[in-house]
Image: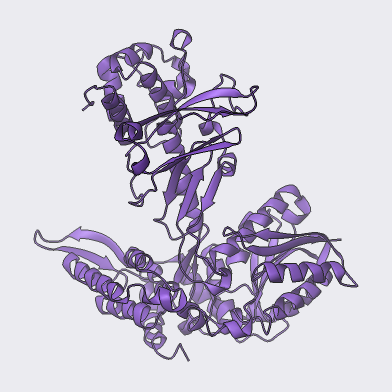
Length: 250
Length: 374
């Protein structure tokens, strides 16, 4: 499941792309089950239930060589990108019909599908009548999916929680400084980056909420409550725990 | 001709505006205002305008007062009926003229309800009641028109969601297309870089619903202005209505008249010029999708024998209208017309254009020609 690049000078990143069943509100029911992983000019398609065993479907560990990095610690940070930069990494498919378009057509086909080329994650939106708005919703959905599905590897010995993670922790957290400001809830667009970092921690400790709680200065119950407060976060954690043979959080 | 069938009774339902004004509503107020003061528009244009009366302007469903009600089960019944009608069509429209598919029509049912149904109220424990912006009977009538007459959904609800705008449309006014939104992005790019363009005078020729003029008006600086022209009195009135709905009267001025004719006073002063003129070759009009060919104004679609009559006219005019450094963007039928236009502009004996480019729309069709005046 690895692609390699001809150039050895490129840095290596490790993504864990979860083939999650997470459903989003308003999402079209048929999200194409296609993951495309591209990096260093080589592209690997791993698509379709038929080709991947159910085990593989749940978890694909992929090593990708990439020539660029957006962050100094060696992890790519897609969530740091501006909307425009993120759009530039995407292939936009507008469910276009063949034909001349423009004045010829009235099809109200305003659905937008974004394929994030570096990870192959697909986000789409069709609920609004305006393509413009669907594009904005698809982009924010993509950010959510990137937070949920793209994992960065952590060095636990030297781990220091990033500010965006501190911001989503409850005030009770012992590592949360007084300068962190109020707790950010899951309706805040900034929640996605905090959630991403939290998931990175949970993956690094193999799904143990107790171990993650220790790192974050929380009680196990406190961290559980935070995880359960957001549906997509809960689903992502539980899905990962099930691959480790652990019971789901309830 | 198309108008004769139904709008008459929509018209009488809407025309006594005062009845709908129990709650003061900005949009409706400005509408009645605008129709009284149409002289402002006409005195600025070189062609005497024939403003249409307020009774001909249709109020879109979503702006009407929710004075009707129905039970939830009535509404469910309608929904099932509407779906059955769609189901009976199947892929017929798609096969005949590449018209809408079942899924698209299902979604339209939902959107229609979004515009009509206001809120759910529990009146008694047995039956939920909802408020409607139109009568139940009218809902049946409208959906029948959608399916049997292929009346465009946007004319049924009276609006189109375009970019972040909701633009009122009605028969006689071209429904803005998603492709055209790219022109706004192109304008955004050039005005971000150049203060002269950002604070300058722009023109949108053949504005239709006013879509481009309004969107551009919103991206210009405080001094920037847009003049939008349209030959059709209905289009001019609808555009005026849309401009007022977005409270842009000080920024966007609608002038009724043909292309550049109402712009004599702006000659050589324009910072920018945009247009989505009719570009479909005449012989293709008959084969158009029914929603377009049978219902939208031919005036806004038919570009003459090769579809380029108006585009060429505008290119000729652009050189004299734009000030040095001025920007223009035109929408075309695609690659063939775009290439022809570029060729025409570059090889014209009096060519004053530079940095002429062809740009593709979201479907990859080479749709737009842009450039600057030397």
